[in-house]
Length: 397
Image 1 (tube, rainbow, N blue to C red):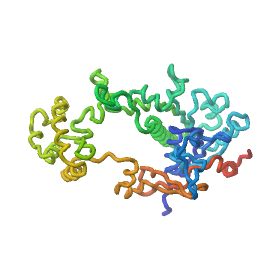
Image 2: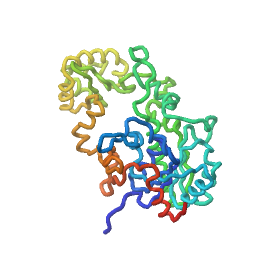
Image 3: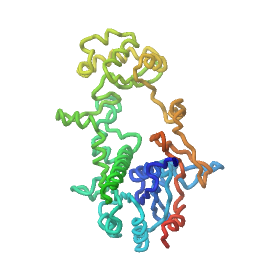
Image 4: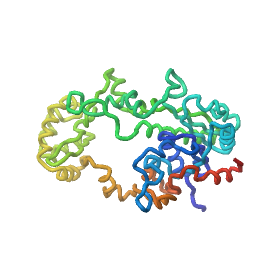
């Protein structure tokens, strides 16, 4: 039997997107074996190429032209430079679209129509093409034509109303997440949508238009917090590092630092009470079930906080892990990559790079048993593959 090929081997993606949500999707597709053709503007390319410092260093320690931000989301792709605003450039993209399976774009609603690169125009020349549009607010609705960015969507979409310390405590107030979670989750939803459309095409033989919006994806990812509101009419508020629905499930101060304790059920809570030397708290009717612990959260947490300050962080982690209570430290990113589990999973990868010799990259979390992700190409230089791509497609520029 022949060796099994990558899941998306043979799929060609025309990627007109830039910055993060779209490139995150296309990097996922590329990791799974798709041939992603990254179309970039002449001279400047993807905006994130200049979003530094930090920049990738060469062998002498000097900055290259490649920003770390850009490197984080563009591996396994090939770059071609095209000025789509010119008639010749737009026609070149149309010729490429004839030969591709997926087109990914994140222009403003209607922004590609003037170039004849909108879905209605493209499907006339390639009805099998799956055309994925990523926008701030979607293709319909009163805000459809407005620009949307991750930070503003984190505020508008409700995440910042439930993130950060309580308003009545020091440091309270709105707080964004430490990474652009709206862009990332949108890229993930777009990935799922494209793969679903590819599967449907096996039956129908036809492509379709995918409408993915940052706001839609952001609201969807609020998950249980949405249902907390939808079932009660009471909007959740910021709770700091405590869980809205589970107690104790939060950060505690120890004698020399902080740790997270995450008791996800009553059994784990009872084990926790035993480990901290307070089995009475497990049978106290005010705390015996999670529902009761939620009602009596303030009194219980006050007791637990005093206990947790009596021993060191690592002592508590060892004691709790010994009885199966989920817990852990709060690491810096440096400490993350020193973690034995992270090392064992080989999450830090290194790839050859034409300017720097090598570049680091974060491994894909997708682990197939038979067709593992291949780290084929470092994030491309601007226009690195222009001639190569045009020759393969039989297109004369």
